[in-house]
Image 1 (cartoon, helix red, strand yellow):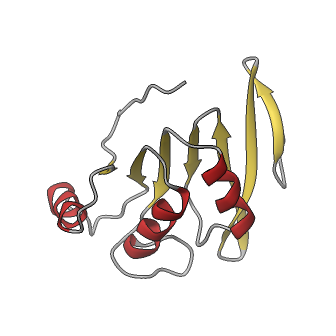
Image 2 (cartoon, one colour):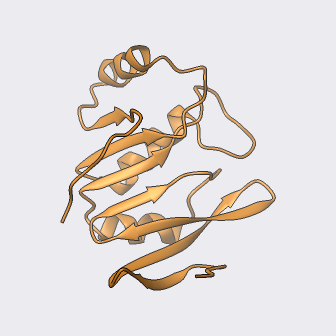
Length: 130
């Protein structure tokens, strides 16, 4: 399977949509499957993709959150939270976190902002969605 600029593919008889994401000097691909989106290795999310994801009424958004401060090729904490607010998923899970994060400290920062639907991911975590 080769997908370069986005599009849709059937994988195990399931439609998977791929969309391009800026990642420094390169482009990576995000994934949309039913009510779940996976966005990692990106610096930003294009406006048309934000609209598509918001309209998808996601149950789960798994999204890049490399570190607390800006980075040249990845999302950082404040920008990630802005995107989560714009997309408005039922639940958002932070992934691709660097060594600067301690799980409980990050969870505390999220809760201090009054956010109840965002969680840092943990290894081997799984999710159900329809």
